[in-house]
Length: 90
Image 1 (cartoon, rainbow, N blue to C red):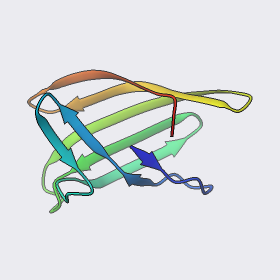
Image 2: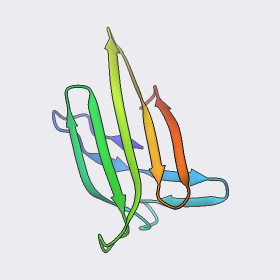
Image 3: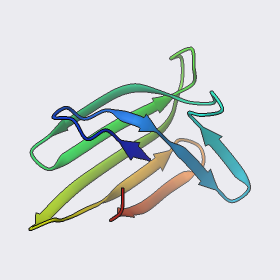
Image 4: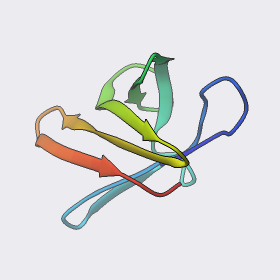
């Protein structure tokens, strides 16, 4: 997932790969249905392009030390599973 660097949080791109199944904003498979960022948390729901079905829920929490920032949390894909997520490079 790529996020913007301006003072507001915005998802610029996302690709979700589980086994051989891949869905991506670039391919038009998913869009951001809703997002929220505040005080060390970043929450995103990805939906189908018609905003009719939630395809994935990303819940991240961050820690910052100096120039280092790390996100960790969960990715829930309804009907497929729940996964631990860590992000340390953007």
